[in-house]
Length: 380
Image (tube, rainbow, N blue to C red; front, side, top):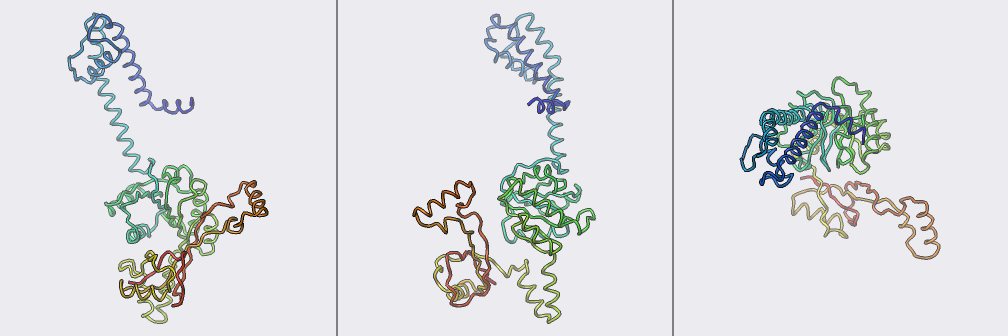
């Protein structure tokens, strides 16, 4: 507590405000002592402080006035010093607001968002990434925080391209804990890590920085979904082990498109059209729950007829097994095993701890849709 107080009053502005507060309290007490019992309009400390504040603010209602000699001397002091004090207080508040605004523009402030979306790093893909995200989710519903070492001018130019979005900027190295804390990373819902090449940073160190940041993020937030851009394919497995939910290899689709063009321009045209973000040919939609227990052929026919869409695959969600999946009975042996695991104080019985997604592309016509099937990919 003493250390915190010392840090607070190390700032000259805070010391000055404390002096003004003590001065007001002292003058208010002196006025009360001088006027109480002699001035029928000052019956309490509140009356004395009411007159004091009104006088300092130069409002001067005139409902309360000092009547004793000592009270009027105090009044003269307040009248002379009141204008100066009020100006100094107003100037201090304005100074604090201006300082806060400057810090915010330079990315040196803090954010207090919760369930927000954080993008770490800066490269040529940042603008396109944000544009693409707007085609999949309603970005206006999210508070967006950019964490990187870009200059203020670059950030302002970037923000001007997305005036409808609530974007905050945190300037700093996202591999540092204090920078991530200023972005309130512990309460973030989604985190995207780009290969940070700002300022001429080499591609060689991008994956290492991504790995360090993920390890650090997981010590602060174990629930956020983390998606990382990876330059070197051999680094992907380490980044996944560190805690990323998924990785995207840089330019991984470019190699497919270029290779397909060698065989025939038609392949290239087809793949580019399907993957096009402008036309959004491929969509992921919730599976109609009334088709659980029916065949994929029936779902295909329904979507083709009613939505003019082609169903090309299903996405299933599979939960990890827990001990309860194996110890389903209440006999004495199972209860004994269950008790020993509980004594170990491990979360072996936690249900729904993690969900894994599995893509079932082009299932057979006779495939029976199950409860685990949650989404369907369509081409429209």
